[in-house]
Image 1: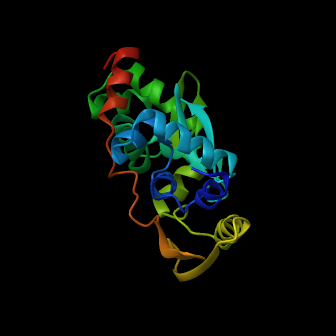
Image 2: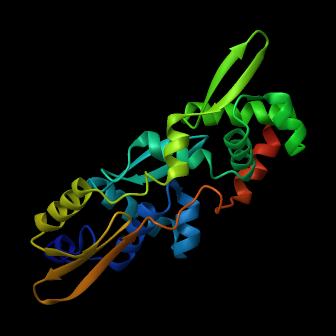
Amino acid sequence: MSPAKEKRMSLLMHPLRRNIYKLICESPGAYFFQLASELSAAHGTLSWHLKMLGRAGLIQTMKFGGKRIYYPKVLRSAQVETAYVALKSKTARKIFSYILNNEGCHQLAIAESLKIHHDTVRWHASKLRKAGLIDVMREGRRIRYYVGDMGQKIVEGSLNLITESFIRFLCDKLEEDCLHPEVIEKDRGHVIIRIQCPRSQDIELAINLETWSFTEEEEEEEEEEVETLVPR
């Protein structure tokens, strides 16, 4: 591919790269093998396009829980992405849900109710607290759990928003490559941008954040990893 054509295909004109970016936006804390599986992409190809998106300033990456995760720049903060990743685990979601419905509960009550080992509760609670999903209060030897600020925001769905700053950021990035973005539809949770490019067919980029809920997703791979670290 010539340098000029590669320039035109940078950012989101390339169909696979566009799908990668869309999936990262819609799947909080997406990690490499999740992206490869859902897109049926070869690892080398995926790695290349992730680097291109990173160099273009569209995505960022960090390590959490031993895995490298990817998230869109400007759309959400690293703290929000960390919170979503913590809830990918089915057990973590059960613990968070129990705390949500029984604020002030302690570790033993969670373990007995969910029929899991207290060390498993402590391990997940540590991650949930680090992500701001829960708060703790110590009473003597006992620790009581409460829903944190980030946890309340996720429950309310107030983090699944398409902000004006994100739309401006994305349009600015597209215009850098002499593309002509036009917002044709938007509301609180989704946006559709038409990308007009000279000598090329128009394309549409649709990002939808409305369907994500901490009770819906299930990551069996994450569960297997937890089981090797702490007893159930």
